Image (cartoon, rainbow, N blue to C red; front, side, top):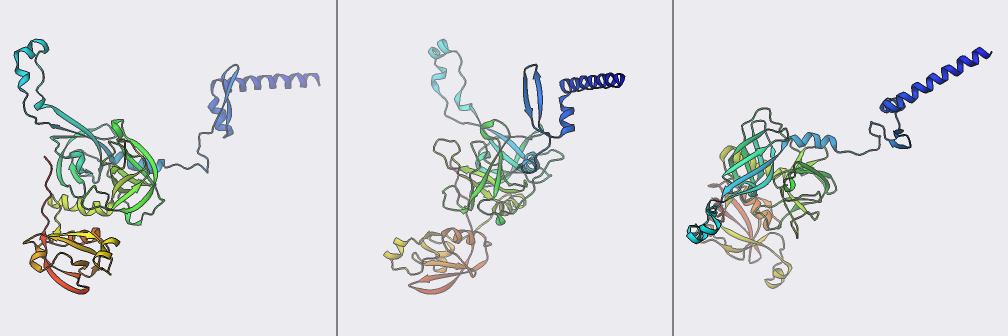
Length: 388
């Protein structure tokens, strides 16, 4: 009996010694065996609790969506020469004597940062027009470390979209989602290069849909989100929780330049139309009739005794334009185009823009409280003048 007890004691001592050695030198082995939080010995008198390496069933993560979309979002660095008038003082002998030769500010080089989204393996990248506006050189940096110089395929200032192209193999194109199916409250991720710190992902929800009259573009239909978007995020991706593209981050409402939780993204529904037109024709061609529509406000309805409050009132007509030639007059109320009703000025402008130049379209309007139809030969919308 004594020999059995001695054998048991020796076996237990050896087992405890082995366990002590394993927990000291390879603590992860014991965590894998137990599959739960365990004490990790850091020093003779210090221990901490370590979580298991597997995610718990209740843990929420958007890592899959972010992992899918991030390789398609690039950093854009643009540079342009500023052409200022030469400063005659730089050639003054007195200035040169005390300050030496100074660089001429007329050849000063300016740079800016932004983001872009790879939309096809052929190298097409979508970004904001204001990101590449006036750029002499566009440098694109991919998340995998590759870099390339891009050329401009075309742009559309009226929606603030542009398409550029790089020549690199095996480009990870983003998957397009369905912004028309999005709803307020849906989780979204904003991916871009804020303040030039590098690729960053922020999370929020869709705060509103169909935002118009923001005053940023001629044609507006923004997705509003509270995902943090800052300077440098412009042109980056707004994606759903699965990583599918819903929009291009374009602007923020801010008092100090930082995020206040109000960001605006151009939806995929707008992007597809503009993107296709730019890639095929190098520009976007829109219909135009030469009128200035305005929304009918309650005050306006009371002043002019207008009973029909939907549609848009014609505030002005360009002389010699398509609408003028067809007989449209100031004060007419446009209520439908080609049988499609329009509730406000934004819908009127969008319906006109979709019409093909040199084709005829039927406009339904109210004049002196009577409904009438007028056929107009659609013209081509002239390009907007860019500021020097």
